[in-house]
Amino acid sequence: MHSCRPARTAVPAAAVALLLVTGSAGCTGGGAGVQGTPGAAGLRDPLFPKLGNGGYDVRHYGLTLGYDPATGRLKGTAEITARATQDLSAFHLDLRGMTVHGATVDGAAAATNRAGDELTVRPRDDIEKGAKFRTVIRYSGTPRPVTNPDESQEGWLASEGGALAVGEPTGSSTWFPGNHHPSDKATYDIEVTVPAGLKAVSNGELTSERTRGGKTTFVWRSKQPMAGYLATLAVGDFRVASSRTPAGLPVITAVDPSVAEDSAELLGRIPEIMKWGTEKFGPYPFSSTGAIVVPTDEVAYALETQSRPVFPQEQFDEPTLVHEIAHQWFGNSVSPASWQDIWLNEGFATYAEWLWAEEADGTPVEESYEEAFADDGNWAFPPAGPPGAEDIFARPVYMRGAMVLHKVREAVGDERFFSVVKGWAAKHRHGNATTDDFTAYVEKESGKDLTELWDVWLYGEEKPARP
Ligand code: ARG
Ligand code: ZN
Image (cartoon, rainbow, N blue to C red; front, top):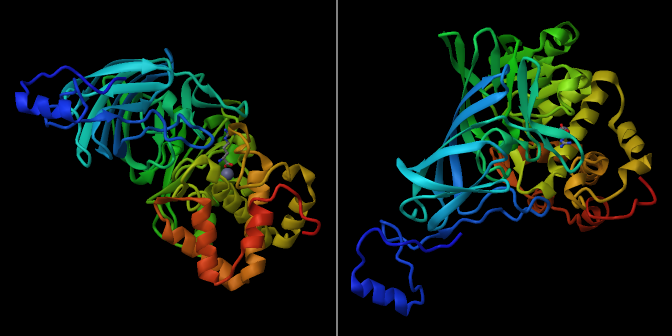
């Protein structure tokens, strides 16, 4: 992508002369007189360097989707509102597969280009740093799942009579274009039209549902910022139920009829786990909760999709439900700044399981910790340093991640530890954080130098001699 385009407006000779002097010969800039350059094609994530895009910050996604399970075709319009973080002559969006039919920027037709998983949009006029702009992308096709570096499949998972979208770490680009790095969070409106009789369930709250001409349109709104990997969409013959927790929070659950009976009891325990989470971690960050349960063969992993985690039926058990609900605070509200920081998600969610097991089944946290310590399978690499993209969901991230938190607890004492846990969730609520943010926060709140703890438990390659 070159940064210079032919002038469409006459440029005064003096301006040309000035440009020649400043060494930008041939560049005449956009209509607003801005000299933009293309936004980067990736955010240089240490593990997924091409993921996300530079030069802008998305504020809101308005997705309008139509899906028919009989054909497997998805038709979409993505309306993306963003703010430029540099003068932009062009910008990238992450999109895998699908055909792009057209794009506009602030209402004017924009040129597009596809290369690999990158969609480039070149507006007619350059966009000035700090300006808010709106781009609309029209696309369609048969979305295909992604095979992850760890061999799991994700993204758009079509099934007989429906589909399910999950995307940690990168699958969301199979069903909508966007800035799919966890550091660019945005609010979402997801409107989905499906054949009448089917349901479409997504994140947040349902704001409207109407049936017309044999089709039903559901509109879901996520009012709090969400990372792209946490977006979900489930289309199918679901049993959907809406209720409220005793505290008044909407609980929206969707379950495939074939697994409804087996899931009913645990679905009923969501309010109790929500209350427990709120006591332990502080105010719940989102305006609704729930779960989506599908047959085991439809998805390989459970995922903490925002406000409404997804579970294959075989993994819909109490520890996993506690784990995915804990992620709402740790991962979804406080999101990793890069995939290198994934232990901040999985370590906290695993530690939540240990806390729950102590209170619910009387298994002391100490015992969960000792068991994790003893298992050599948990020691392949340090939690803060997954060596490659295929390792971000490997056991050290979860187990050593939780062990780090237990070590912090031992070092600072119970009272300080639980106030640090709540304080961390509050400090970065609806934001992003790095591992360095965490270690600095713990040291500041506890007044302790914990260098040695981090060196051994967070960054150390070797398993320590004693637990
Ligand atoms: N974050 C999910 C959990 O709750 C796991 C996601 C796994 N993703 C994958 N590509 N293997 O632990
Ligand atoms: Zn997890």
